[in-house]
Image (tube, rainbow, N blue to C red):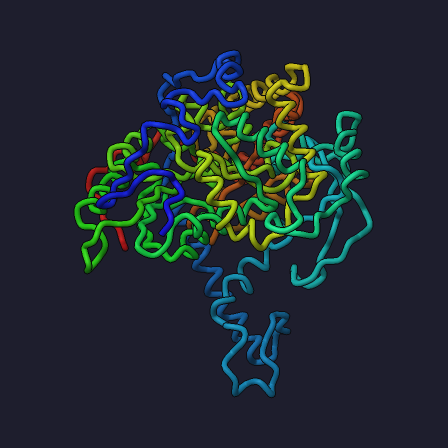
Length: 552
């Protein structure tokens, strides 16, 4: 198998060369004047504060009532299914036609039990259509259901000026058209909307090359490649990097795109506990000592998959410790910065800058443009030989249509804005404002007595609701108060850890946040959601566990 990392692999170990691909000695990459700009921006720095993350456990009675709620819902679900089978209650779910009864079932009845009897009752809290730009406020199309959420109809009424606490618009760059977006309009008029070809054929434009050079400069790496879809950036590129005979060590809370990419690769997958360095080191040590199962040959590659910010937990990867383990055991490191690029770090350059590390300590830097940059698509960045390898072997490069030119221009515009290349410091001010808003919102929620998860610097803030009935009531009541939130439950979270997920933006004013907090305070009292006993990190085993069992 080709080695995209540029190192020689011997007995399962990766030995990095002392020279870069351009022949320069190891040290700061000086391409495009990156080092000078990095120093001017105060990067690299060293993150010298303790990593404060909270994962407080709920009181016992809350968990008992949560499971009891699911139990009662299941019992009534079986009762309703019995009534449907008897024809007493109308069945709105997809079922087999009478003439197909003797065939293998197309619709698995039991697999849809949860959707049919639990999710459907509260389905109105998801997929709400909006009809404006997803800025700090947006407009929502009102809809109602006459058959208990099986179908919806629009009333024609628009709910105006709803405070947006759910979109990943971290820097407020996903906004309505203004004069600063004229370059995007100009590109649309010159290039059109679509490319109608892949990167391997007629789909590489000068705009794509300009964007890739800018991304490499922004991240202080040798090269970068952009893709039209963020999800496919993971799922279609991981199989190009590893395959049969390789080992993937994946954090248990990794995004579905990472999970799918790992499964499609054909590599052996081992799961380590979230942000648990003892768990990861045990898997690394066993992989080096024992090699592949049965044949005991050394692994061709060992790849560690992690995220910068975990979107359901709001936690930040313990990158310095993972980099140390990666170097100790000579493994590769692939980090997904979908939620962290643009949102953390002194100048918005993600968790690598947040911890003051050298970008070359991470073999594969991945990120998306769908959040902080207000666009779509993703990138892979790192060494030039890695990017050159992906240009040839990536499924996205070979088969997927290239990124739309106006989208590429929007990313270029946003990235220059963050870097200050537009001649202003507004981008840096937004990064700092996001950090201020994040700390303020988290601090106030803690003071109110809510259980919230994650790192104190993470703009993704999960607020634990637990009980399924409270999930629905929470979202409905807040929408009535013109506050739009995202609520998440099983299977996206553990069964008993349903939550609301707030995404703080630099575009949120203090008045907006205070309005949301005031309403949350009232909702917390009304629904009795203030479960916190103010115990920080009530699950120390999340980081410090020394005895554990892992399934293959």
